[in-house]
Length: 105
Image (cartoon, rainbow, N blue to C red; front, side, top):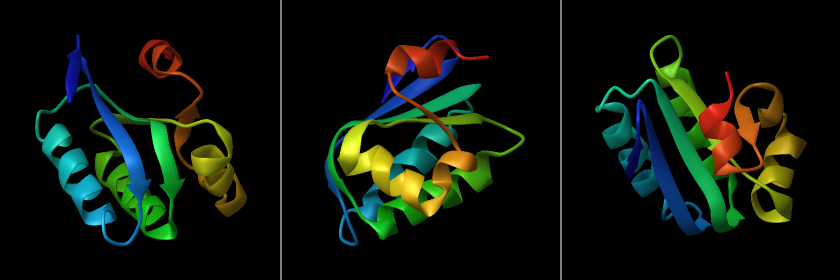
């Protein structure tokens, strides 16, 4: 977890599957407890994103609504493509770079 002014960036790496999704949820919840204005979950270094991981991201997004701007950084076939196919890109703010996510209105 990295503070960036009024934002917190959570840098995630590796695979997010049934075994690791709960840990992702715990990390996101810990970041939200800091009450940042914006929480950026950076999936740039994620190699695999299973449906369990997407479910955690959706749940955390819903939990943050109205309190925290919840943003995801995702690119390519490992992360962005599965979210695009499931329609998540229409529900959650997804950016191609960390800088874009931090500076978007």
